[in-house]
Amino acid sequence: MKKIVLIHCYSDQNRGDAGIIESTIDLIRDIHADSKVDAISVFHEHDERFKNDHYFTSKIVTNIHPALFFEPSIQKNGRGYSVLKKVCMFFKLLLVNALLLLFPNEGFAKFILSSEQFKTFKCIKEADVVISKGGSFLYSLKGVNGDFFLFRMLFSFLLPLRMNKKVGIFSQSVGPFENSFSKHALFFVLKRLDHIYLREEKCLKFLPQDISLKVDIIPDSAFYLKSNKQIEFNLSGSKKVAITARPHKFSNDNNIQTEMFEKYLNSLAKMAIYLISIGYEIHLIGQVTGPSRQEDDRVALAKLNEILLPHKNNVVFWDEEKQLMSPKELQSLYSKMNMVIGTRLHSSIFSMAAGVPTINISYHGTKSQGIMKSVGLEDFVMDITKMDSKNGIKLIDTILEHNEFKLILDESVKIHRKSLYTAMNQLVN
Image 1 (cartoon, rainbow, N blue to C red):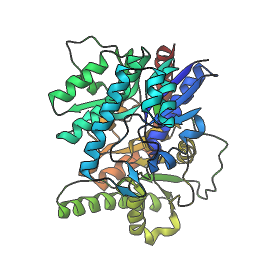
Image 2 (cartoon, rainbow, N blue to C red; image 1 turned 120 degrees about the vertical axis):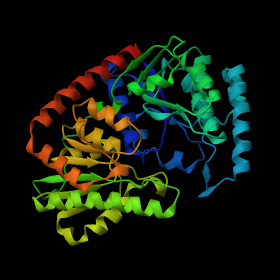
Image 3 (cartoon, rainbow, N blue to C red; image 1 turned 135 degrees about the vertical axis):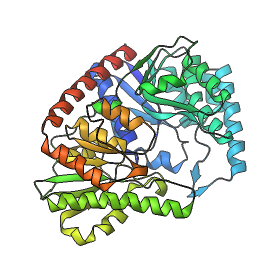
């Protein structure tokens, strides 16, 4: 029985992140059906997010453990710690983890760690393979906070490497790096890994050319997510389009922020009204619901829903107040649509993996363009800062009038899944 540990597991309220974890576990278990998969959170055992935000992941892994080098901005009893306390906490964690690297034995770990953290240590000690799951978190922004963040992410690799475990990165984006310290710290770790699977070719420019690394480009691991066909939804209309939106930071200037956010929502509203005029029902769906209000898509969708109130009989707002859908439930809902207009990239990926064409609204550099190009839909990307509803309506018509996009998509997804399976097979064997 293979014992595999996934590190860098984030909040399940980001269903893109939760879907990455679930698709990675699906891959592992398609290769080794009896494998034992443990997950290590980025949060501390007393963090409210560790207790409450792993509800989907906890059901599909053997165990989920707290981080050893956890996020300093831990919340306790609903309150955040001061900057001074966060800095002190960082250096305390640095000392504890440095001592673990010097003395990586169970006796010392039991003495220096809490009982829950000791379970984290032990699951790494017993692992055959340690995998940093997909996403985009190996980067650094300007300033000390950016260095602290990257350093904390990198430390998760060091203990399994010290224990001579097979360690790899699977389906990630890396970079950018704003200073040389961050680059050197990253390269120190990368050259010690067994394999690095990146999901974007453009990330190669951030890697050193003078160091030999085992690097391959593969698709986003969420393309392996398979919707549950048995999930039933009480949907009325036969012609349906889903829209995902997000609260986006356009500018630090309040006036510019308000103006651009309204332009973004109004453009989506005009596209929705056009679809309603040709007989489609609109479904407003939140891909991400936290962990903070600034990341809760339902905030943006509620405003979009207000704009569409005159058309309320043709609009369904999935606010999920009672219970959140799992990644596979969310994907199953997307699979019932004729098309998805997705701001969140993983709402587009979930949809495409289910065979549903999508228009993606890009807000994070060139990531969307690369992924959409990989499935033959590179012309169906809109820039969130340059929203134009007329262009959006043209893209809608093009997708609805040409069935061949679905055929191209189906073939591309098959190739992506095969590529992901081959890469994971290499990593775990």
